[in-house]
Length: 465
Image (cartoon, rainbow, N blue to C red):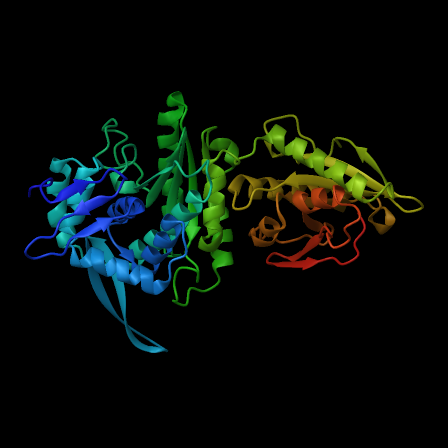
């Protein structure tokens, strides 16, 4: 193929794909270059995903009709190719469309310098023969397209690189790493920014615990090989839910929780390896936090955040309570288990009433290490509260889980059996700070939520700390 004669780069950033005797011509908008790059990464994309990407990239309001008309032009010019899938469900029969690169789409990518002629020649025949992908592959593409769109909305994350795991320079089977490390673990997708690899493992609920544990061991080995380079791996198990598929998937919350229980203690992972488990609908926001360095939050920073929360409570409660910070020996370990210590301890005392003691844990949605820290301190609280015999639970401890935002508090899956002797409460720092700086605005009401069963959270109306 001659990759230059039919393609012309325009001064204003567009690309002119010339008319031929068999195919129409088209002038590509600058943002359509990015569309083609994403199609190249995904190999195939559902029409709905392409429409969402178009809307994001164009930065202007395009109707479905406008986008469909534009896609027709790219099809007629040979830049794109379309596949059809016959679908039957309770609503009847219909055709679902998916898109892939056409031959002239490769011409465009070569003219952009995105691919070499040699790379295009190797791939174009394979793309011509692409079939409709498997359920797992379709789910992976839809989820990672959602993630990419969310990244584009954030200036700090918009420079990320997205690759399929099997083609990634570090994780793929064709990577330039040592033979020992080549293909040791191949994620579904990899998002990369600065010194961070965010690896995406799409979970449809079919992999048993021994498979997950095997992946853990391989990720641990891979992370150890990257340590000298300063690179970290954030491995996110994304559980397919009804935001991705119309199939009857069962209780996805239980699957997320099951995954969180499959990992060894986080102190064994290594400093540059972190694991998360989260439902697909909430994954994009988490990935942006990881790519922008907002998470994971180190232990010392979590302690400062808990202190900030206590300060906000003092202001909002307007001296209704007195506050005492301390480190109780029954909860604070100074040995090899100290990394599991709570992030703070506080006692609130209302005049004329018994004090209430709280072990504070700053939680990160989806984080397996946060889940394990909560699990450890729940056991410590149970053991201590069981050991005391004072009336009215005067000296007993409650667990307070503090999240960044109320949505994180609501969405996170932290299903553990709650002992009768321990109360587990949940709140978020953002709503307390909003109220702190807007004391006269009574519409801002920080919530205290109680975890009454492993999967049931109930707002405690009128609860006083």
